[in-house]
Image (cartoon, rainbow, N blue to C red; front, side, top):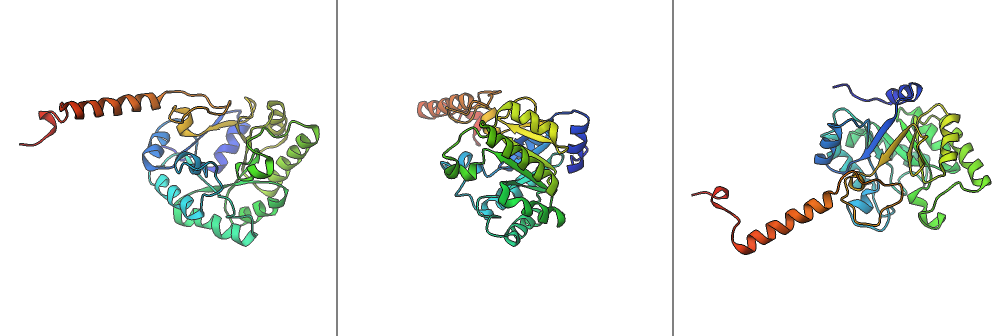
Length: 266
């Protein structure tokens, strides 16, 4: 079983091999994903929505991200492990960014970090990369900036905004990021960005032309409640299976048919 590394993703882009990234927030899920043909596991700050039941990611803390990444790392043997830098873990200063990013590598077992980037944080990428911390950038719709963006809206539709995102993508590459997430941007813009930079792009709601794709695990297995974003495809309906199992357990307990003789001790 060969470990996926940062250089492997660059090589995949050069060879036109698609990259697969999936989120995980706990050890059992990480083990499932790691046993499949997934290249990258992201411990996303989306755990705020998915695990904590929050309306957004803003309330997620650095301690919570380190905790979840640590338990994911225990069952991640093959995939590259990325830890998401939560809101206000890097925005105040470059020193804060360096301190918190190093926590991911030293305390949690992450092998790289992801930053939601605008023009203000380009220097941060360079400082982390210089310190030996691999950085995955994230542009387009940035959930940590939802209040500034006016909600979860597609970005880059206007000519000026598209030009800005193109310039930003090139700057992210120039500062030393090893890959770039493109979220909720028009597919034509994602295609142009992907063809204009040498580092791999990983899309979510950015169309088919990115070098890879990422989805939230709970979304793709159908565990998340409807409605879900347009870019999500459900590959299973685990929610329905679980509800059926729980209903059957409840019925058997109330009827007195569980536990049966094979389930208890004499």
